[in-house]
Image 1 (tube, one colour):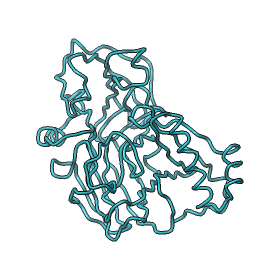
Image 2 (cartoon, helix red, strand yellow):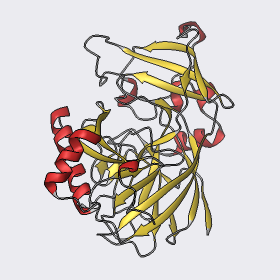
Image 3 (cartoon, rainbow, N blue to C red):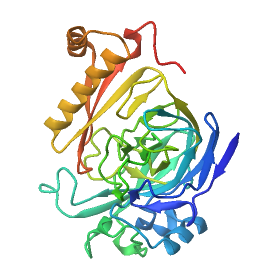
Length: 342
């Protein structure tokens, strides 16, 4: 079955995951979902980043927080139960509008050295898959992202040239996607966790396959925080934020022992760890990668430990989402008999 899930005031929730939310769509395992996702940064340049549908959501959805992210869903998958794994294949991710926003914010990694909040607006060249900054401006009235859905009135006089002659590669992906957490309460969309959420790995785009451990019946998947580009680290505070339309395939897996979010691409498997510090995130990623190598690939813990030191790359995912992230990268070429095929 092929389903269409638009982003409207009745199909989104703003800033949280909550297992008590009723699903806005129910699908069978293996179904396709064509989905719209909206950036909560559309108000940074409403003349470029907002259309009538986005304006309707910003005007109508008043229940916001504690996080800032707009999420479409939740989507229930028939038969999904705790202990299962929800496989989310991302088949396409395409910008809704040809503009996006980056915010250097007060939670950015170098705010002490580069204080102040600055918005930089980029325009996309879809054919070349490149972005170019068109202007930037400083925001001084209040902390821009502390009020989810802030709309900044366009001020041509404040808009300054930015990054002349520089291009950035487009990497469309979904920054915050996950199943509902187990506890019956509202959970902020900001920190990532074992349900997924704000993982912010730029590889969670077209061609990627995410595995989420199901926490509640139906899984209750929500998708949002769309990005068009991001570097590992997301150092200034946000990625290049822009609304995306995507095509997903949702499949229940009962043959995988994952208890944490795992990403598979054509060439690699990435195991995510989170912590209050980078040291804690690194330790979590290392232990979780070790566990995957033992449980999925049949290595002894001693063999897995040796393999990790000589063949696994550990990379900072992001340092700006309250809980910091590190992912361990396993090259699929190391295992000629790949055990995870559906």
